[in-house]
Length: 214
Image (cartoon, rainbow, N blue to C red; front, side, top):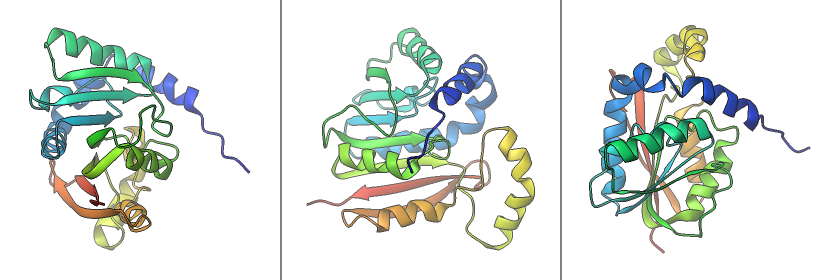
């Protein structure tokens, strides 16, 4: 049986968030976003940002980068286009509406892929990761910033108690960090490098998955 994803429902939700997203999240997400951009830029200049949203991460890429951003929401992308224009972000080469599970790029197009705070919202995360792997060059990295649920222990128990509150602001504890490790382990050419805590107090995580050299 095929799984039907409510992509139109997601688009409607993002359209409501677009006008206020920056004011709510700009400071809270900045540390993770800066570190994701820095990690990606170390891999090379050609960077794909999956889930570019309103473009909050775009100013953090170095001037020598060649950044392409995609997002499911046209309303979010309009905000990203405004940032590109108003801040003269010449390193941003393109912004397009696109499904993360159906990337319209040739194989091995990018040196790195950033995924800022969107992997837990994608209906088919493994399918999206498969597409990222396809368009990533050997030696490149998928850099994921997100709220990743703890696998076990006291932290997992605390997160479970806070789950209803986190769901209201769009975060989920259902997506465990082990899900990324398991995906990487299922592909011989991919390796999980690390999952490190970032601001605030390690609440968010930065995960790096490398595509091995042939």
